[in-house]
Length: 244
Ligand code: OAD
Image 1 (tube, rainbow, N blue to C red):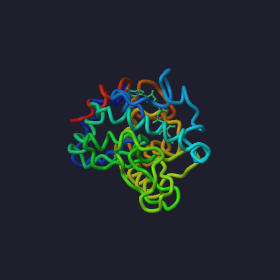
Image 2 (tube, rainbow, N blue to C red; image 1 turned 30 degrees about the vertical axis):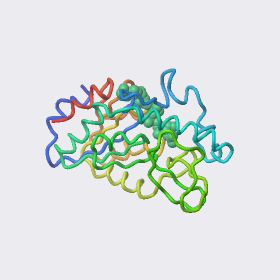
Image 3 (tube, rainbow, N blue to C red; image 1 turned 180 degrees about the vertical axis):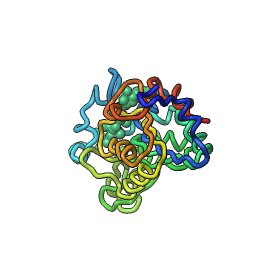
Image 4 (cartoon, rainbow, N blue to C red; image 1 turned 45 degrees about the horizontal axis):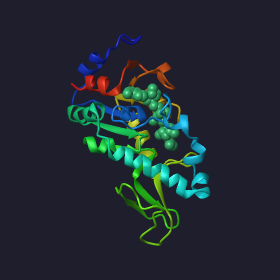
C-alpha cells in the first residue's frame, strides 16, 4: 500500500471505459522474456560494455562494423524471445479502458508483437535501418544481417534506426509522448531505472499534470521517490494484476 492508502487492487477497480492510461516502459519489462537489461546485474549490457563504444554516432563513425556486430547480436537475441505476461497485459488493459498509449524506451518490438496498438518507440527500433547518406528508412527483420548493410536507394551505409547517446528524440514521437503523458488519468512506469532523460521526465510530467503514477520494478530507481504507488516485483508477475 502507498502512503496515500492506494493499493494495486484499488487502482485496478477504479479503471473504467473512460480511464486514459499511458505507460513508460524500459528494459525491465522485457527481462522475463530473456532480453538483457542495460543496468543492474552482472549480465546487463552496460556492466560489460561502455555506451560510448557502441551507442554513439562517434562510435559508429569510428568502427561501424563493431557497432553493427553488437546490434546484429541484439537482434538475434530478441528474435529468439517472446512477449511475456507484462507485455500481454497491456493490450488487455487497452480494451478495458479508453486506451493505453505506450511510450517505450525499448527497441525490441515486443509490445507490438504482444498486440498493443499504440506504441511510441522513444529510442527507435532494432528492426529499422536508416541510411547515413540519404535518410532512407526501411524495416528489416533479417537475422543475422549481411554486414555492412547498404542502402537500396543510394548504396550509402545503413545504420541501426535507434537513438544513440548525444542524439535527439524524433520530434513527432516527443510531442505524442508529452501529449499522452499530460492527458492521461493513470501513468504506469514499468521496468525502467528512470535515469535516462528525456524519457524519465515523462513520468514527472504526467504526475505534475494530475495523473496518478504507479511504478512496477524489482527495486526503487530514479522516479520512485515521488510516485503514488510503488509495486515491487517482476513485471510479468505484477502488471497483470492491474487488468480489470
Ligand atoms: P535499465 O537497464 O537502465 O533499467 C532496467 C530496470 O528494470 C531497472 O530499474 C531494474 O530494476 C528493472 N528490472 C529488471 N528486471 C525487472 C523485472 N523482471 N521486472 C521489473 N523490473 C525489472 O533500462 P532502461 O531504464 O530501459 O538507451 O534504460 C534506459 C535507456 O538506457 C535505454 O533505452 C538505453 C539505455 O542506455 C539508449 O540506448 C539510448
